[in-house]
Image (tube, rainbow, N blue to C red):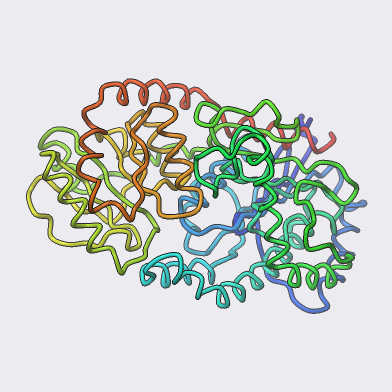
Length: 473
């Protein structure tokens, strides 16, 4: 454990990158490195670890992020580490500097190119097939991100690295620096279990054997990016790894610790999870005391019954956004409901509201807004799902892709909302499903109970204790 004013710890956490310092600090950072300088910096980093940094413990968490919802949990975690005395640097895109500054930790810009690409490309996509056509460009951005992570780690000289699996360099940097690496992702994506399949398989069980076998998919990163990973390992003085390397095993065969920042009340901890898998509870930022609604929003909320929130976040696929908007507005009108419709990056397009009963907004903090609505309808991103459940509001998930069907199934299984409605079926089914959402008293009761349970958890505190247990005093 880390304790006492004389002890110092740095944690670097990267969601595009990350790290802490001082008696339990985490510094989250990501940087740029290329060519021969990698090996020289590795030597100097090892020299600092061997003597120059007296009593110092540094942890480096790597995170690869798309949107504010991706980054925000790790900013919350960095702030919690700082509050426990750690010196934290967070490596995230430049556009999130203000968010990071709000928790009083340092920042190393990283992943800015990838975030810009996603913001520009996603609203123009018509669906997952279009997304596949961007893989070449994304691969270039991923290569740049790998170098940024290495530069961040060299600058931080961490004692521990926390990395999101999309931050491909994370475990390899930990190996090169000779420090513990901790994988972190806000969904149960990596640890095999008989209880449910890998979340990208949706919510339906494949049977105990099939569920557990589905987690072989987690080795796809080394299959897809094996050449890039091994080129990077060579540059930092490491040997090659196989294309099917186990992401949950260190080179010495020991298990990789995993932090899962979601609630056990939403996804119960499976009986076959190993001790190295830690379900901590969600990582929430405290509300921003400086944020206030504009007059339009404040006036709309005060003018009538609590509205239904509808928003699809960064699920752009803008070629169908007008149709989704019409389905949403039609569902609200059919059920005589007031609504707040968020446009996001293109999940819905802004347009004139058909009546005074609907307000169209660009973005509003979920932690503030969801407490003031009757129910929430969204795409099922991990962050949006967490915010809706924490607020104790019935939720309807309209999944587009990825892990979103899984979260929709979990919300329904918990009794906090109806069965998920796939985005492609919005036009035909949204009106009926929204009516069910707002009129079923059991959804309202169960959502309130679940919200109370989630609010009682200390997810960031649990995560901090895991990191502190990994770095010797």
